[in-house]
Every structure is written in structure tokens, then in C-alpha cells.
Length: 489
Image (cartoon, rainbow, N blue to C red; front, side, top):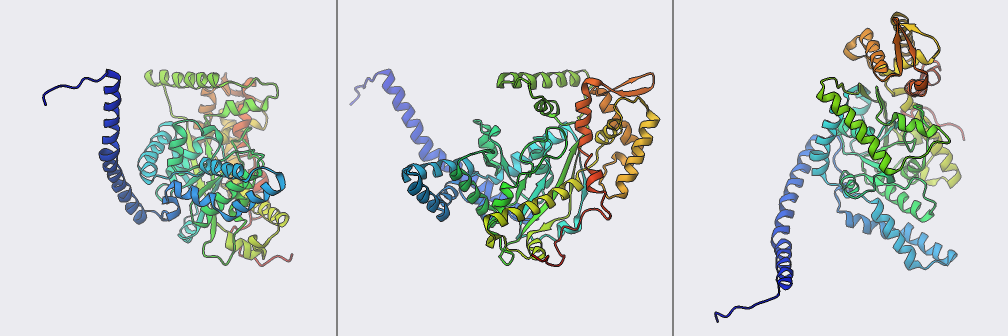
């Protein structure tokens, strides 16, 4: 009975690994799941008493259940069967693609990760880089939104910091779900982004089946009341101005909407602006038709060089944050009220008519976004120089021209962020940042734009250049409530 058993070392290692795996699966994993489930449920209970808009059950449903629900959607299965009949592709292969697309799109929202880890990271990152300010908010309009509505924040897209900034500022009210491009589909990052509730979108997929899967997911989330954030431009601005919008996701959200349904869809226009956009120079490179596209290694080296320069400035005590980042929240638009004013039912329109109505709605939303984009110090001063880039100006001339712009825009309803409520200080801050970045040079008391950085000057001037066009009409933009009489059709 005391005899020993000798086994080869390789067999002992395998047995030890199997024993450790069994202990982990049978003992540690259930305990860890219980621990984290308890923490997550505590967070959810706290959030449902604190948030303005409660977390919908759809958002808390397990990812595998949502994938299964999307896969078995009758519209998807019927489309697959029809495509197999007409195109000759095996139905099994089409269903396999539906499953692959569903797994690619559907997020895995984790309330603990979003409100504890994500909120903390977003808050620290935003405040480390910028002086973050909430400029204007239509408090009365926002307070009147029915909490059971599906809320969609529609916003301009200037920087990838937009995701961080809006999520941080809105976290006390709502948990947002974003559509994120394929750039974020890298190991590690995509798991974190899915846990934040975001879903991935192929911007230019030519596969009708993929677009249908995406359409059905967006429709399911919208009908279930999931709060969402939407960038109608579809991508970052290249020249600083608002881009021509794309209305695909907006169409997916509204195509099954009925004004008499249980849940309204409420769009909240959001305007963002920065004194400095991290991606400004890389975006401007896209305007050069013959530019050589940087590879991944070059992009990483550029980012590291930027971080290194800023680290040296920090160590030398000469580093300043990147200026002001400001967010404005405009007047909500009720789709139920819009449909009543237009005398339409989106769900009853044919394809062509619905696309026309979605485009009309989208253009109205873009006008609302443009109207609430904040005027920040750098954009204001850039506008002064952009009027006549060849002219040298004294500080007094710059301030005089900027004061005139401020008065004109404020009279027309523009929302201008004036730090410390001191216009003279605001203009000085904007001018100083342009000088520090060598966009403007000072010589003998006169300031003149640097020739090679004129595109960068125009980039910041363009962020507010639309005000002359958007706000020139008497009385500004039409109200967003949709309370006008039905138009004859």
C-alpha cells in the first residue's frame, strides 16, 4: 500500500493542468460569477433610481440571447430563403453568414464596466486633455422628454474624443449605445467597446444580407427603448466643416415607427467643438489627392512621438491642456410630433417615399445640430484671420473684429462659450493657442497666419463658418416640436 507510482513528467504536467482547470471551472468560476453578478445587480439597482432614463431590459439581456433572437428574426430568415431561391447560394451558407454578422454586430453591455470603469476612464481622460464645459442645454425641453421614449442623441463628429466626451457628460442621465466603425475591431479594444454597449458597423458593405442584419438589430434596439448616439455625418470631418450626412442608420431606426405606437423616438441634437482636435492634421492629409497613406507602424510612431513631446513638456512644467472642449444639448425633436405635423406614418411608406421623408428629417436634424455647435475661443479667432489670411492684424484689431462677430452671432441665437464670462479673456486664449501651435505668428506687435498652416487655420474657422448660412433666416431655425399643421401632400 506504501508503494509509489512513477509517471512521466509530461503526464504529470498534463494531469496538474487538468486538475487546475477542473478546480477553476467547478469551484472558482461559479464563485466569481456570483461575486460579479452581485456587484452588477447592485450597480443596476442604483442606476435605475438615479438615471433619468432607466436601463431597458433589452440592454441587460445576455449577448447570446440577443444573437439568437436576431438570427431567428422572421424578416432575416425570409430574406435568406428568397436569396437562396433566386441566387442559387445554399441556404445553410446564408444562415451561417447571418450568424457571423449577428455576432459581429451585437454588443455585450456590462453595466458595471460602463458606469464604473468606462465612466471613470472617460472622466479622467476628458479632464486630463481638455477643460471640459457643458455650454448650453435646453433644460425645459430635456425635462419634458418621456422617460419611456427611445432617446437618440444626434451630433456632429469632430474627433474620436466625441465618444468619450458625450458618454462622460450624459452618464448621469442615460447609458448610450454607439455605432462604431471597423477601426475599433482589434483584439482587446473590441471587447471593451462591446462591454460599453457599442455595436460595430461596416461603413460601406456591399452585401445586402449584412445591411439587413444591421437594419434588424438597430430596429430591435430602437423598439426596445435602447438610448443611442448617432453621428449622421458617418465619419470625422475632414476640413472642419459639417460633412454631407448619411441617413442609413436613421432609416433603420424609423422605418417601422408608428406615431400611435407604445414608444416615441426623441432625437436630441448635440453640438461639440474643441479648441484643439487631436486628429486635425491627420484629417487634413486626406484632402491631399496624391498623399502617401501611412501604414500602421507609421501611425503608431506618430502617436508615440506626439505623446513623447507632451510628456517632455509635462516634465518641464510647460504643458497645458488642449484648451476648451464644449458640448451643447439642443431642443428635442419628437418623431411622433414630426409624423403628425407631416401627416405620415413611416411604417406605411414605400421604399422611395420613406427615403425621401428620412432625408427630410435628417436635414432638419443636421440644421439643429449646426445651430447648437458651440463657438469656442480658437474657432472665433480663426474666423477673424480666415476672412483675410494675407493681412497682418494688431491685437486690438483682432479683438475688435472678434467682438463684432460675437455680437452678430449672439443676436442670431448662436451659443458662444465665453470662459470666465470675459470676452477679452476668451479672445486672448484663442489667439494664444494659435500662436503656440505656429498657426499664427507674431512680429513687431502684428499677428499674421503662417502660410504652411493656412489649411489648419481654415479647419478651425470652418467649425463655425456655417452660422452665417444657418442663422441668417429671420427668426433662426424652425421649432423642432413638429407642432405645425399637417402639410398637404
